[in-house]
Picture (cartoon, rainbow, N blue to C red):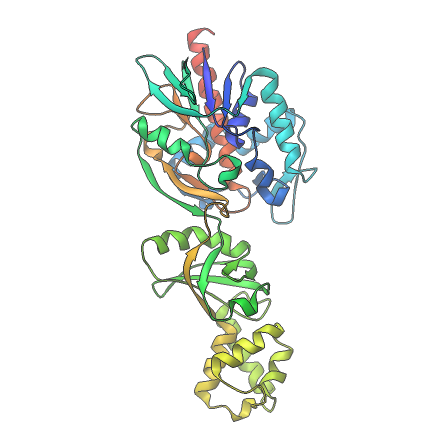
Length: 407
């Protein structure tokens, strides 16, 4: 049985490491380029807290795949390959070496030992026949295969090879795509002080508001940039934010300028009480021990007040504005960074046209795995776990077909 895997990223490489005698096509000169960039170069393999709540898109498909290929079984394969792992204090699972190159080397070695890995070759077309498929390679060469697996990834980090080419191949085969957009991405915001605040970090809660209603919140380090906001809470909220923004909804982010605040209502009460405690103080003096020094300028400019004005001299309505800026600073979303800055692509091949094995319901023998499918996860190892599990589920299905045909 001739089997072709198109795409040498995380899912394609893991699948190849589980099979023998397959041909893997990778358009770039090397496999696994995107894998090297995951987890800030440490490769966040998965997360100990695995649940459907951390996944988006077609959750029914996620559940079916994970029932066939659990996290425990995936890591059993990794450990058999010689890859040791560890867990950090946020339940994220990494290779013990804390190097993404370790994961790539292990996968590549096991894939190359048993299969034909062909790099620098683009697959331009996949055509379904009565039995099997014909692949058209760049240059016009054609090759026939019994089974084909599309593992081309999404559109994020195009320099790594993920340029969205799999979407065109899937559409040409009659599959439908769910709306495609980037996530785990930094957002652009409107604020006159972005250049002044560039590089300032705040540790605390970040709230996401859509059309004037609070939708979600995440806690962590919020980084202010010259274009908007970045940091783990921003990346975690970016999926909802980008999706709403593309629908022309009004999106804004709110956070306290004070470090350590995990509830913005409590932050408001805190600064209110602290004001009365230091009522005779000048504004600049009051703010010095409370917020990053760059925020002092921002607060005073927003209120059009002199740093020498005393708290006790402010009208109550000015005090309320003062408290709100400190406790619930707001930035309106005006866009998001491009695909080369995003970590994942949302949407993709409709999960309603794929079974839990990853097999097409339109063309038996055609499989879809990894980021190409309408499944995406939160930041923290969930997207790689989907890549591993979807590949393992697919590997089981392929072996079942081989057994049925007596190969």
